[in-house]
Every structure is written in C-alpha cells, then in structure tokens.
Length: 521
Image (cartoon, rainbow, N blue to C red; front, side, top):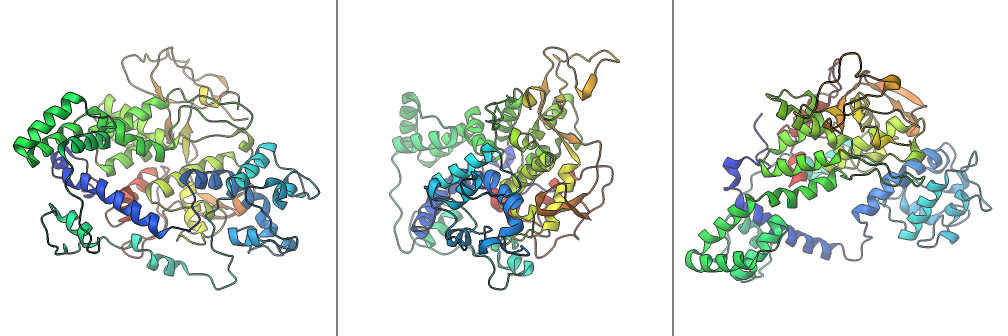
C-alpha cells in the first residue's frame, strides 16, 4: 500500500512539505478565529469536559437510568427523559432534573444521595459516582447531547452518511485565481480567496520570524545567537535563509518532542493510573517507553499509515531485527494507557477496557464519538450498535498488558508485560518463567513495556444489552463500521486465528477511507 499522501513523514518528501506544514499552522489560526466568531453564544464544551462526561457520566446514565428514563423505555418514569440534555433540563413531573452549578437544588443529585428521593431504587450508587455527578453539575452540566429526544422521525443511517462531507472521497479542487504578491504556494491561494477582500498582514520581520518558527516547531525560543545569525542570513539571502532555518528546526530532536505532545494527548498518555476512586494512584513505570516511541516516530518521519499499524497491531507485524520488534511492541502501549478506576472493577470491567480502546480509535483516529453505540444505535453519528459490537470483538480478543505495578492494590489479576530483546535482558532459566496465579517473573533490570497482544481466547462478541456484559444479545462477527457511502467492503471479515487488530489497522489506512487522513490533518 502506498503511504497516505497527505500524511507521509518520509524524509524524501519532508523538504517539499515544508511550506505546506507552515501554511497549515497559519491556516489553523485562521480557522480557529472563524470558528470562534461562528460559535459565539453557543454552549461551549471543552475537550476535558467532554471526556469527563463520556467516561464518568454517560456510562452511569445508560447503565442505571435509561431503562426507565429514556426514549426507548417501555414506560417513562415520572415523564422524565435523561437521554438528551434539553429533555433533562426540561424535566418531568417534578420539574427540571438539574440546576447548573447548584448541586443542592438538583433533583438528580438529591436522588443519588438518597435525600428524600432514592434513585436508582434497588441500591445506592458508589460514593465516587455520586461525587462525579456533583462535579458535573458544578461544571455547569456540560453535555454534548444537545438534540431533543425524537418526538419527530429519526434520521436514517444512509442519510447520516450522505450528509457528512467528511466521509466523501477527497477531491482535488482547482486553485482559485487571486491577485497580489502574497500567494507563494497553492495553499495561500485558497486562504486569500476566503478572506473576503481583506488584505494579508505584512511579512513578519526576521526577528519575529525566527522566534515564531522556533517556538512552533521545537517549543523553544531562539537563542540570541540564532536570532542574530538568521537576521543577517535573511537580509543577505531572503527566502533561501527562511528555508534553511525550517530545515534545521525540522531536523532538531526537539521537533519530535514538541509535536509528539499532541499525539500523546490523543493517546491519553500518563505515567500513573490517576485516582482510582479509593485514594490510590498506581504507577505506569514503563509508560515512558511509549512516550519515547512517539517522539522518535516524528523525528524519523514515520509515515502515518505505518505509525497506526504499529500502535494497533505492532505485535503482529513482521520485523527484520530485535530492535524493530521491540519498537513495534512498545508502540502497542497506545492501547494500554487507560485509567482503571477501582469502583468500576466489576463484572463490566473487561468491557469497560474494550470501550476505552474503541473510544480511542473512534475519537482519536476517525474523529467520531462511538460511546453511545455501546447500548444503542448512535443518534447523531453513523455508528450502529452492531458496528460497535463488531469492533468490541476485536478488542475483546486482545490482551492488555499493564504490568504488576499498574495493577497494584486493585479486584483484578496481575498482567504480564512485553519482554523486550535488549542486551540487558537475560532469559529466565527453563521452568521458572511463569509463576503461580498467572504472574510472570522477570530478572531484575529486564527491559519491559506496556502494550497489547493476542488473547488466548480469540472470538466474536455478543451485543451487551444496555451496555451490561451480563445481559447478552445476538452474536456479531468481528468487523468494521459501515461508515463509508461508497467503496467499502462488505460488513464483517473472517480471521479465526487472530483478533483482527491488524485488519482494523489496514482498514483505517486504506485510501478508500479519507476520514483517517482528514482527522489527522
């Protein structure tokens, strides 16, 4: 397969993409400014608030409340709907269910605290869950579910797909004709054509240019010596000096450190589990290997399609050396860096980990929220319950490798890590590698890495009714979402011996699916 052309980090094309990269920086600022104007007055939800809702609030609503308080309920209790923000704020027979930033006046908080009202009626939820809802109200009840429940006909899946421009094939539009001296490359033509007659700002002086480029590309300010040297070179050679500066900054190891941060945010990188709800914070002592892998990938200009293959299925890739094998194993840390709250370690824990991995691929790679489809067809995005379950089979057939320290003190078994083939690692004598109770012993100083590998039980998944792993519906073959209106292969695939992670990676980077490239850009 050819690398994705929009995303190729290959050194041979790096210099040719130099201007486009910097152009994207400028274009991004323009887009942000336009978006700010267009969204003035709209309800703003930060990425952190959205993540809080999706991980702490929505799963509880689905699991504990939707049976009686959703559009699909056989009988709606108290005429109260909780499956959209507008319906929740309208409330039921007792009035609005929530009061923003006022937990004491919010009926749902009173019910969860068993203060006059008692919901859910069978048992009080764990104290940490109640605190999460209090925090949500104190935030102002940020909620992405802004469309009221269907008191009008629903939108068909085919119509959703047809309306999403992001799913349509990538076009190659003609470069718009513009006048003036500013446009230096085709991207500039598109920007200027959309500026509505406005004139671009004057070129930055060399002192500002070296400062901006240094901070944008390496995260570090230019030194006084670098600034003086560039100003003299720019006055002597003009654009050639600018190009040489960009080349030097892109070759800096700090480039990977600066831009790798963005991918580490997507991968929810951390070196500890985070508060598990019981005041503990288990460490991820081997997470740094994944961090270094990401930085190195940007510095070596790994093509994006290879980057994704390594992170989703590095343990299944063929490699030519121990070093490359280790690199591919470390890359699968992408799937292991998820928080494991102790309060969630119940019968649903395995599927909660699967849900985290599906959400990571959905939002991080495809830019689509998929959490709703754990329990029912997504109301806004073209993801069905069947799509979700097909993906769940892939990740349920995958074993996540956290390691002993990451699981310290938690109602789950110790999990082994990837042993790496570095010279410092000495094989354990025969008969002593596997210890009792499923634990693995490694000699002191053995290089280890978090990650993922094939499970000993590879197979398909059954629909979890209402998101509950104890309430099982039909079997769904492992497969991929039926997202794309054209050029998509039939739903489902056959791969009995493997989880399907490598096939999923190939599906994501196939050029017939432009969404992966668009989301990365």
